[in-house]
Length: 120
Image (cartoon, rainbow, N blue to C red; front, side, top):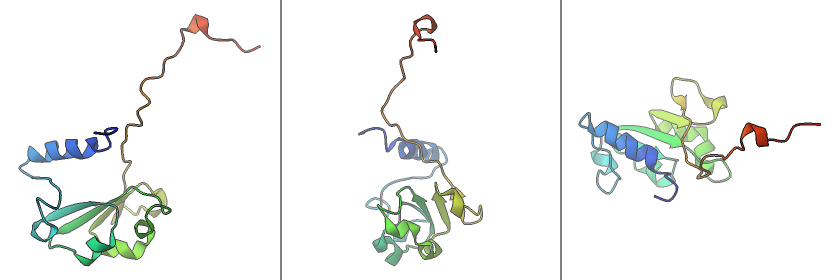
């Protein structure tokens, strides 16, 4: 896993399996056969193929990367929208989600106190 970018989904899959829920990609569970779909960002092909169950979308890309994410008319195709954009959160349909990510920086090595420079 590149930089653990998929780790939240791995953990979600593990947690859901304890409740008897199978989380998998659409090649294993086609949207038209699923009672719930969770999409990562909005794609035009998914809007045209709504499936039969409840639909959630996680907005993780900025407008310069995915213009569809920021066209709020597209939100009508979803039961819930999870986004980092606090300005659009209404806690009815659009909810705040702080998407976790490991930036790979690791722990910061801090010098012992006695080795720190003091301000003049």
